[in-house]
Image 1: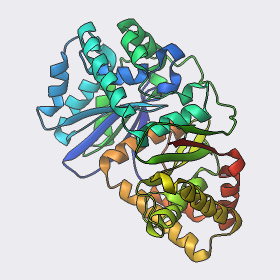
Image 2: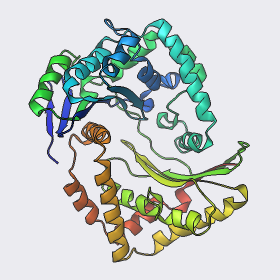
Image 3: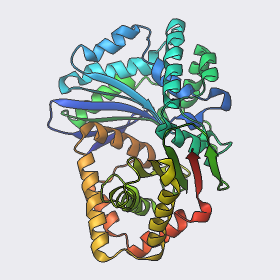
Length: 406
């Protein structure tokens, strides 16, 4: 993959991929998420993501939203446990307009009190709606279970009590401490040259503060596996099985990505989908997921099923895991699994908005992005013995926890 990268004198990193398309995508990825909050700040990173669009020194909320929408563009944002992103999709002729808007939002946001009050009600509604979705809520409850007492275990949205109490001073303090130049990446995919992208970044972001982050994240050490049953009065039983996994820098990370794809990834021919849905017809919603954080990670298996089928589903999942722990994948199975994963990665890069965000996140973590050829070589080098070793290490039943909504 050929891309342009540079660093401004203040420490902000830039990465751009040229594409011959009328539509462009640009974003600012900040190495700050909910795990960087103090306990009394829970939900603040997400609150800032909402309110940073509510007014600047020279623009009101309406003018911020209209700046790109008036020319057919879209402005968006998201917050995770470890990052915050502001991003936009727009016609490539409006790069200047887009990057000026990002600069204004990041540097000159005023967080008016009347806008904060309105957005608190919006977010509390978001929290309440999330609590009505057990298939989503169970992931938050599970991370609170396995990361008990650690900031990474707290949910991203926060609590209504915390959200109600946030002030403009809380926001300014959090941004000053976390939104430092060394923690920002400006990423882009679109029809302009690297030289032009650099010029725009210099024009609009060179006056961003050169402060650097002065704290380190609290590392997660260990957990004690546990099984928890909660009475949620749901029609189905919802079950999540999982535990700790590799961090983003771990040598076996790509091996675990491949193992997860085989076990219960997004394809219909994953082992869990075949066992629970196709052969036994006892689960419609079913997936396994691997999430890597800066110092730890999680592997999870989720399914929803009729309550009478709960134990059978758990037994089938354990059986499939045990097979992966005891038997080597054959050459044909390994070849198919690798080709499938490479194909999925290649198709994901066809979505240029996803590619832009992936570029930004990769530079945030690794300060580079491997092309598909490099990734394919890494995937192709994985052996059946490595898959079995990873299955025994990460999916050891004695290390896994289970959360069930009855």
